[in-house]
Length: 174
Image (cartoon, one colour):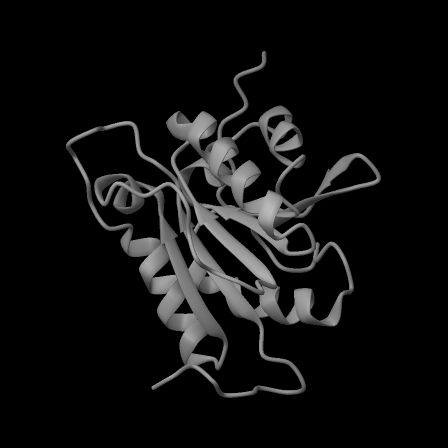
């Protein structure tokens, strides 16, 4: 299966990104990101992947992916610096792509941290991405902006966080 199936009028080119992890010798495949990749590929989208740890282990610093519509990145909240670094590097190559952050970072981050990350990311998926990825991609395809009707998809609209978290982190500000 080549992934070259058109659904509707547009086939999105999706790039899955696993940023460098903190643990130098504790490498593991991100099963959540792999699951998302399988879901979007089965929906007819073209899927590529970059794993920054795998690049490092192979002695490479550059990647060879072209023409990306949507970047899907996952990462833990303890890995914010590497998420930012990966997003900066990829955004410098694909400035018109839509960037989506999921995983523990998007699920557990405070609104202030999400605001900081919105410099690089257009949308944040809180909770289980496999439940919302296809409606989110259809929304991105239609270019209708912030999808506040999709639970657990967050974005900034007019400088304010928009969307509803089903799995919200605890409020520890008081």
